[in-house]
Image (cartoon, rainbow, N blue to C red):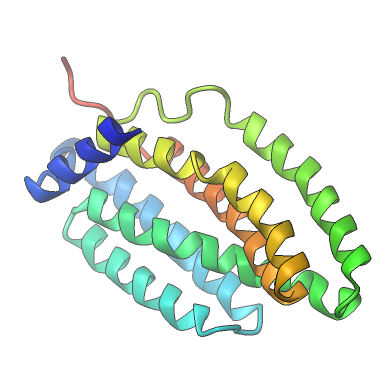
Length: 193
């Protein structure tokens, strides 16, 4: 995983965010525009908690600017920061009123989410983004490495702090899967060997 993260850092600092600009610019730019529009609509449909909307909006604005300049790796990194937040707000909005502070109800939601999340993760396959550039693959792999940790931590947060915190954390693995799915499908081809 450190090698993957190092690859991302090297590529981003080397300014290779637009490595596929000429060939892939219109489809990639359109994919980013559609994702940003979708995430903004999702944010508009849920109440805020802990200023996550503001943090996410900043990331979306940065992603939009970078995509407009064909800096697709920079745009992808910005969207990556936002997706766990929007998913967290969605999970909280869906369950908070029904659960309240009922820890047993939270545990049931956590278990049900585990089944759903495992199915979503399995749908990505063993090597999502295999045909994407190394930097994109590295971002996918590093995010997926947090998937189980976020899921497990959600229960611990719910049991040891507040149910609301547990629900917010339960949204994070949904954001991880959302990011991996989006990044794996981006119309940016890996450079020819």
